[in-house]
Image 1 (cartoon, rainbow, N blue to C red):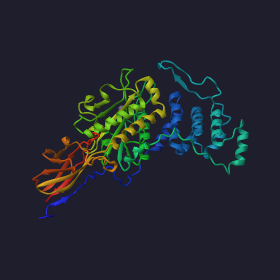
Image 2 (spheres, rainbow, N blue to C red):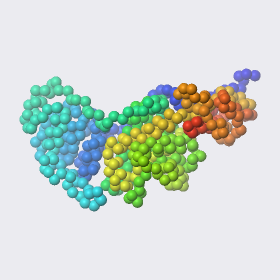
Image 3 (cartoon, rainbow, N blue to C red):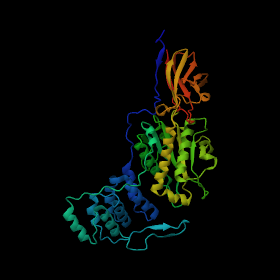
Image 4 (cartoon, rainbow, N blue to C red):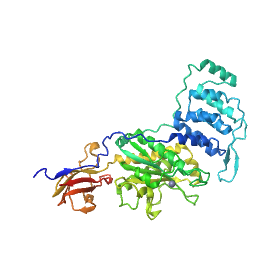
Amino acid sequence: MRGAWIVICLTACQGQLQLRAPGPTVDDEIAADLERYVKALKSKNAAVCLDAVDYLPYFGRAAVPGLIAALGSSDPNARGWAAAALGRIPDVRAVVPLIALVDDRAPLQVFVLSDDGEERHSAYDNEAYSVGQQAQIALVAISGQRFQHKSEWEKWWAGNAATFVAPEPEPFLEPMPLPPQARWLKGLKICVDPGHGGDMHKRGYKRGPTSMSEAEVNLRVARFLRDFLQQAGVTVVMTRGSDREVDLKIRAQMAAGCDLFLSVHHNWSPRLQAQATTTWYHESQDHKPASVDLARYVQEETIRQVEPGEFPRGGGLMADTLMYNTGFAVLRHLPADVPGCLVETTYYSNLAMERKLRDIAFNRREAYGMFLGIVRYVYYGIPRAEIAEVNADVLRAQTYDGLEDRREWASAHRVLSEYVRVKIDGAVVPCQYDPATGRIEVKGPFGSGEHEAVVELINVHKNHSWPKPLKFTVR
Ligand SMILES: [Zn+2]
């Protein structure tokens, strides 16, 4: 009777460490975001405009046209800070408009708050901090030449314009090497969700004591995380690429087809001293144990980067139902087969921490921590099962500990026998597991039609299998 009743469809490919075809490129709404940062140069708040000067080089040469346009602004801060930013992204297109500003004596007007946030005073009392001075600095950086007067710059340019080549921009930030273990990420597809967005116009909404926006920092950290993941060969889906509101349910749905989901947030408390990093999973530890695995590694590595030596109460792993009865919508609506968690890195309501969070190098370190968390998690292997044989009377599946391609001389089937569990069509069924072969056997009978098997496994590193159903049809 062979063949009459066996049709197996393995729709959910479990080979998470196999290479997959590259996905669509991440859609980053650079134009809108650049416009926003260039606009921030006009701010009289030193924290805001200097932050933009610092971050604009992230976009590289894509930022140059907008900055050149800002050199023609009627606002001295826009002209001066655009010049400063252009000095960090050397580009031949900026030379002539910068020379035109060398004699611009308009002072930069920026103010700072005292650390307690109560006093405002000028950041630059000295009128030497003018638009022209910033243009000079930028020209020196771009040309490698040093002249005092506009006429000298003009003369130099007249003689060199035809042959001049701008130097490559300096690395935006210090290089951070990928650990060798990052190679196990290759081929994965991960959804990164920068929390909030589209809320900049709401006064005081999710802002720190000196007005730093959580949505802003979330996006920066998420971008750095995306960059690290892409370097490791991961296909990244970003739920937003600019300051834009995206419905929480839609964000969750964007994770469909991804292997993992990570939402990036920063925390707030009315208690100004509050400080901790926490990572949240949905509902309870039993809902999707793989989410807790991911959360644990992300939590450990993130805190190691941002608050070395800290140990939050309870280990920092939290169920989102502690916050809301139904948990966080963005985790609640995740596709059933996608593990995910939400990291709240530090409290931006804490003045000292808010100051750190403004620093892009710190933002990147946060992202590096999250990245290393994902690297460590995946490095320890995701156990899985594949259907070997199925008919109306029996289902046989082969288990893998997720470490088979990095085994060296360890034994072959390192899943914990005691925790092997099989669900058929949602109900737990008795099963036999053979630790010598890694084979699972489930006795039928199975009715004719389509079925879903979920094999739950825990490997030697305590990583749980992903909740990907194995579909099969009995005829
Ligand atoms: Zn948030």
